[in-house]
Length: 334
Ligand code: GYE
Image (cartoon, rainbow, N blue to C red):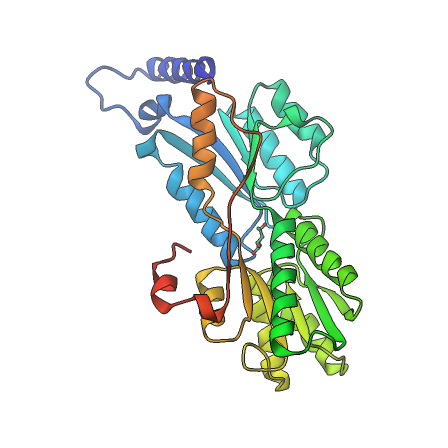
């Protein structure tokens, strides 16, 4: 899609080589070999969870030289400012494509306008961006986080009926992910809809777990120490569920498929599914991090002058102890 830039870069490299007196007999150096590669600058949220690590790997394994790419990778350590700085740097470096996994939804208009002015297409992956003008990004691919929350609520309703507890008061502890991230917003909306549809379901506490085990452990432990009634812990990702489990264990509270407190989680990573098969997590709603090939498909379409579908939702399922096997977990990619 951006042959002019690639040509300019190649020309610049040739000039540099000539100035350095490089001659024909010399082996082409690394930079000369790179001139036809498609340069992709990727800004990743961080490394807060197993899901995120799998997502980073998927991107790194996809955008490799053998497939014609040079990947520039940036870990934002959960900071939006850092992502904005990375995007500006990619613009300066005249990359061919910018891929953004945004930490939160809002606050991108200005920097995405700068990318647009520079003629660099932006592909948004995983969480969404909320911008005034959606021509600021070429396409988005990720999960339907609201649907994931709804799936969890539907399952909970059926599970309570099965247990004969559907008429009793139910105290739900909500451990939220990073505030303002699509995954948090959608999963929270799902829970809120469930709460309003069931007058006997009560929000016992809303805690901030930041999608990490450490933070969730800390806040759930504190809550349990206060003696709050808990029937369900709704954790917005697997690592958060691990933190909640750690706190419950420490306090000697029974939980999971054979215990008292119902644990709901999202992601369905291998570690999450293992806990699910062991009966520690009651429900794990799936969320695929394997976005590398999906983003590559979008780039290929843009390279061919096609218009990719603007917003692409990935199909996902959910898991309980009943529909899992060890074999399935071992074969899973993440
Ligand atoms: O659920 C969580 C990660 O945005 C879908 O971010 C992603 C979420 C995922 O840290 O584990």
